[in-house]
Each structure stands twice: as C-alpha cells, then as structure tokens.
Image (cartoon, rainbow, N blue to C red):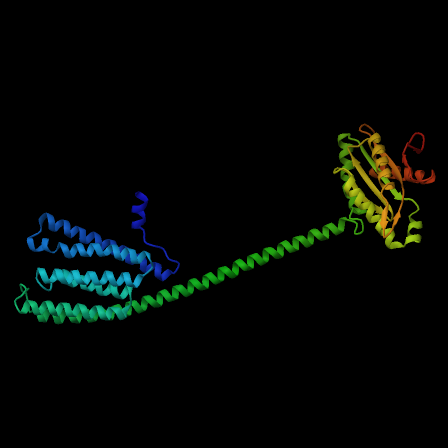
Length: 400
C-alpha cells in the first residue's frame, strides 16, 4: 500500500527531457488542484452557506477529472492531459464566479494562472484561445452583474472587464515571450546536452581505442619478449634466456644447499640426416625433439636449444640419481619416436651427457656444471653414441 501511494505521488518518467519536464509540472499541478478542491469541499460542508454547499458538485467534478489528468499524463499524452486540466479549471472557476457573485479577485487570479499554465504546458498559441475564453467569461459575468442577475461588486462591472481584458492581453504578451524564451533556453540546453553526449561518446570511443592500442602494444611487446627468449624453430628457450634462468636457479641451489643437475644432448649423426633427406627434414627432426621435450619434461625443468642440434635441460631439485634416470627415459623416448616424412619414418638417436650437484656438494660456478655435462656428452659420443654418460670427477667420465 505504501509503495502504491508513493508511486501515485511520483511523476512519470520519460526519455525525452521536455516531455518529462511537462509531465512533472502537470503531475504536481493536478495534485495541487485535487487537494485544493477537496479542501474547499470540506470547508463548505463544515461551515459553508447553502449557496457554497450547492457548488460542491462543481468542485467534486474538478477533483474527479484529476484522475483523468493523471491517467493521461502517465500514458504520455501530455497535451490532452493539459487540455483537460485547463478546461475543467476554467469551467469550475466560471461556474463558481457565476454562482457566488460575478467578477471576483480570486477568479481573476485563477484565470491568470490558467492563462500562464496553458502557455507553459501547451504553447502560447493555445494561450491565445485561453485568453479569449477568459475575456469572454469576464464580460459575460460583467453583463450578468449589470443586468442585476448577480449582486454587483464595487465599481462599474464593464470598467472592471475592460481593465481585466487589458491585463489578460498583457499577460498573453508575457506568456508569449516567456514561452519563447523558455523554448530557446530548453533548445539550447538540449543542444548542449546533445553536444556533451557526443563529446562523452567520442571520449569513450577514444578511451576504448586507446585501450585497444595499449593492449595491442602490450601483445606486441609480449610477442617481442617471447621472440627474444625463445628459439624460433623449436619453440624452446634460446641459449641466452636459458642462462639467465639457470644463473638464478644455480644461485638458489647454492644458497639453500639444494640439488641441481644439467643434461646436454645432441642428435647422433645429424649431418647424415641433412645430407640424406635435406635441411628441411633436418629442421623437422629438431622441431619434433622440441615438441617431445615440451610435452614430457616436468614443469620445474627448463629446456632450451643449446645450439645447432644440441639441447640442454636444467633440473632444479634433482640429484645425480634422478638426473641419470630422467636422461635415460629421455634417450629411450627419442629413440622410439621417429619422424614421419611422407611414407618414410626417420629414426634417430641421441647421446646424452649428465652432470649434477647434490645438496651438500660445493660448486663455484654454473659454468662448471655445464662444462661437466658437456664433457660427459663428448664421452658418450666417443663411447659409441646413443647412450647416457654421467660426469664422474674422481674417476673421469664413465657411462651409466
């Protein structure tokens, strides 16, 4: 019930600013007229004379028509609602003036308000019609007073009618210039609002465009960073980026006394593959190895193309035993994964060198770890290829 009452007291809202403004004025004017009519009816019933009580029908009609005004307003029919409100107010004012004694000050004030309201709500052209009806009502009441039908007021009724006619004409002129100025002001405000909306829209488009450009630039920078740190053929890290990461991992392993291992391998007799099948097929073999490494090494391991047909793996948190086992699994995986070229399967093997630093084992530089793995790789090559050799500092390099 409270929400319904609040809704009835709230003016309707429309997307058009001018229509919303007129609807708000009409809504509150209708409520004021209804409250005024109900108040007069109550006063007449309590303390009014017989002639005043007899006019309650007209006041009741005034209040009843406010329902139609409210309904038309909420339907968006502003001109029709304004016409109903102005017409019923004019009619009731004229009836009350006719019944209670002719041209009265209150009636004149109401007529002036009707004239102003007609110009404000509908337009000055309708105000001309309203003025004509107001003048007609004033002269009609003046004639009734002159003929003795109504109790005459102080002064000549026709003289009063002439004065009021002049006042109404003057009010019409005021309404004309008022409505004209108001229309221009509202049009200017509308144009400013349209311009402001356009500027805001352009600004939003510019912001979106700048945001897209920033994102595109960020993607380009990310792409450049990716190109700068990856090998374009295999998609693995390149040698430079590998050593950047490896230096950090080596420092962490030394500081916390954690194990760290490295694996270096290259493709056996890779020159024979290039000479037999061509360099394009040789590149496919390298791409194939890069894909296998990416899909099978642990997330913590760091794989890179070391150069040519050589690859390198850094194994954080991996001791010597773990590194040897992983290297052997890798050798077996590559041996059992030939490259399919048209109708021919290209088999290849790899030789692997492994070096490792256990948790409590001292080591001065990361280069030392890499050199040990490299020596183990050459030992595997000299020992017949397709095998894993782990670097043994005390006994030299021995196959494992």
